[in-house]
Length: 502
Image (cartoon, rainbow, N blue to C red; front, top):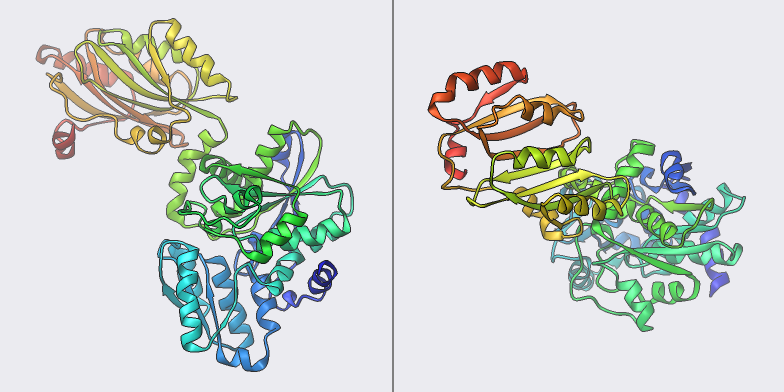
């Protein structure tokens, strides 16, 4: 069976539609992690994913009669595009069943390629069940996204190219795993020709069907799958892929959403390409595995397997990348509700780059601040929290709190009964250390800050929203302060949204 796969891979017909993708160094990331990491650029295929290889190889090997009846596939997107493009090249009908959760960019791409899209269910497994019914009803040929020898062989050409492109020493190849088609083909080829190279699978912690199946010694069905990495959101791996993975894959690593976001950013910084979450999964896994096993000066390949990113997700990715790289620590800090506390706390933060600052007056005795700061290493968050506590500020480290990172940071605030004489202003100031302290030092000590919001958006100018309690008799002095601080500002005191929510 193994030699049969080698023959299938070597005689695969993928190059009628697919291209041999490059194996590119990632110099910035390599330098940072003290290992040479090479990116196998499957994100540069005509449909921005490796899935084209397996789909075309399967369809090209069908009988003319089977192709004439048409094909059907179930896919979260990338396999769908591969089937649609292959069908167009081979001149046959293609029906694609996709989960309703599929990013719109993938649905639109399939339709542009001539595929007939049917939306059904919330995961690949739901779409697969519906496709099986349509297959029988309309007498179509099913093109499985991973559990088919011709599909596996097509994906295995990725491993064939890696060995041809890098004949020198190679320590490991990291591969994203959903249903297991890519890693089955890659591992089957590499382990038979160069068994010394480790093949390591990477899964997300909320879609780890293969990892659980290997541990259990049988195929496990997940009740639910996470949808951020939609390209690997598979409830149950294939029978044939499970068999091959069990035989040839050396190890696994499981990563979280923040690690994927950080990997997307890493690849962008080295290549200026934006990978989809599943496409960056192998990079996230490589970084985590190398760190956990304390590997240094090794050479590894990470297959960047897809770039069909929904543009709307970029905001979330940018928000979470700093946390995923452990470059942002997030805290809830309590302080006495008295004049000077806010300034004292800002002095403790010092020259650190602040990523987020949320505060709303709510209690006459204690104030609660949500603050994010940039850090150089994961260990720094404990050190910073201790520094705050040492100076009398009760501190809760929220760096690993999912609710805080996803929701709380956007919800701090609300109405307050303690906002007498409050005025609300928006300011812009140069995004550099010390700008905030300069602003605070130019304020009159008697004016109390009752609301403060700042979020670092990576721009040259920072934007803050601030509520200040200014007694009626101080209006003239406040006007002088606005002129002297010399930052652009806008009075939002009469803004209807402020009156409604704050």
